[in-house]
Image (cartoon, rainbow, N blue to C red; front, side, top):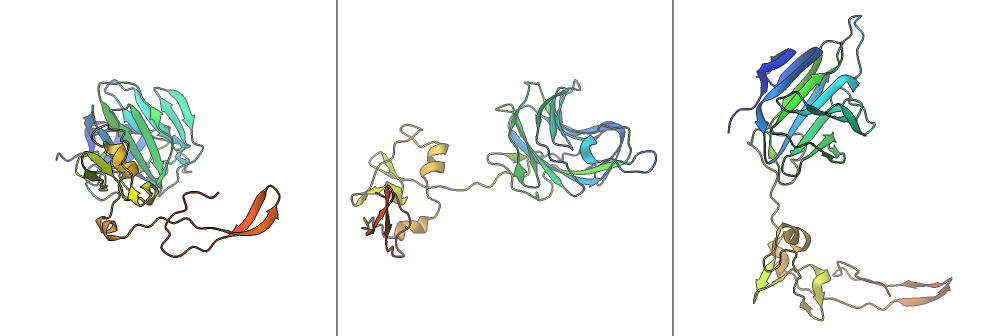
Length: 269
């Protein structure tokens, strides 16, 4: 995989260090990544290292920080440090949360579905639709007259602070989201799961699959089990009678005794 960094040949009022992964941005400084995306699903993280400093020495808050993507024409999609999201200069969303020094901002770029999603310290916000551009570059800007705003970006060369979103790769392509295996059982062209809610009348019921004759990703996610050792556990579905404790308004107050073998209560009647 190619090494992806901030681009020393595509910047303005920015000095780079740390292998071109740390940017010190002065007044309206901006920089893009060395690689653009035109398909796929990608994730990267930015750490806020330092506030920008005004000419009188006072520190600016992080509302001037702009982090997101741009195209080669200069059109931008970014989140401000005050939680406002801009798409081509128009505010489309406000999450009303400021960034502070030490915060980790994660960005998911889903080119396939034209969606960008931001994450602050592991907390994901709602996805934002994005325009259909020819290409998308990771983009960083100090949107003020202050100097010395510092950020460090991780495109995937080192482990991320937070988990890569499902079906994503790191921006540099070196890491991918954790693949969680889910299993189904196939017998006589029918598919089954061993989840207890599909066990009735002493046997497992066949599944109705979204994917039709073959299970798709959602079927594995919704019906699948992830531990093959569960195949060795006996299944037993019980009907437990409660002890009536008398009238209580329109309902009944009762008690039941459940043994340790009961995993799930399907219904109370």
